Image (cartoon, rainbow, N blue to C red; front, side, top):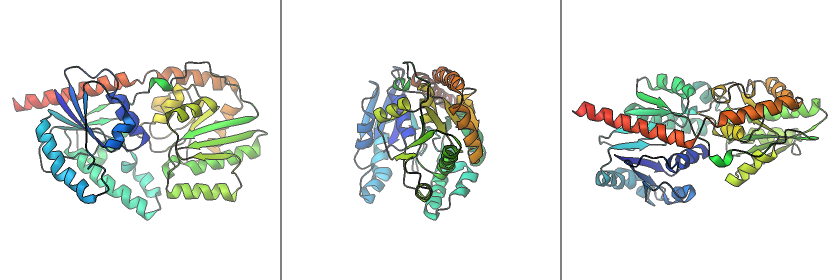
Length: 380
């Protein structure tokens, strides 16, 4: 069986992890040949993939020339597909590239925000909102045209299927967790005078960073402790500007650190060196950094929205991400209770082992094969 995968130019950290984990899992069936089509830059970032993944790179995919990008999608890529003659095309980023030709296709949903009407209405910046709405329109078209869909969580499926208004063959296949994010060493759950809280996520309104910073501000006023919040992910959105203004106006520079980007080693260091992990998203497709924190045995305060409790289960303290006092209460519960920190950190670590890239890859390729076999039955 020949599977064409359109890796495209990459995307978010979650999408990078998805491609890296899925196509270097070591469990892709030997009778499946994967053609992975991508840009030079994304392949360089991914590094080596499995031996039965044949990487095809083309510099027109992310060319600065709009004409070359247009010609890639309209002419070069369709010719390449005809030459490879795959049995199935897998659009791992969710965006089909079939342009007036028939193909057996499967797409993965990576962006729940596009289908979350409540969160889209919270976006006040006109340019950002237009971008999201245009992207949503393209995504709906792709999902409707695809033969089958992969969802990363039950919550994503529940939200998206009604929005595209059609019933599709689908499968829920969760992310895996890279083994390097499992902290097998003993974690010290003791907190000294400085309490270090970590939140790993790009800064957007639906991530509720401003509410988190307000909660840290209030905690530092209430408790005789030095509570420091480390925000890793950065970004360039209107939400970031609001956050920076609040930090400046309230003179919180000494208690808040914002890092735009860290590599894998830097991220591992953050998980190891912080005391508590916080995840405040209210619209999340899966929550990969939540899973990484679980693998690091961190005690976790987590949003009670968007299906996140399905991942963390009873291994965290939950809060309403729209309510500052709720965030304060959850963090205070962890900060003041060392026994609970250790109990929840160890339990989260156990649950993290349920998510492996080997299982994700096995389930994904089984699903792709089943979609292909069903198509053969229809032909015969």
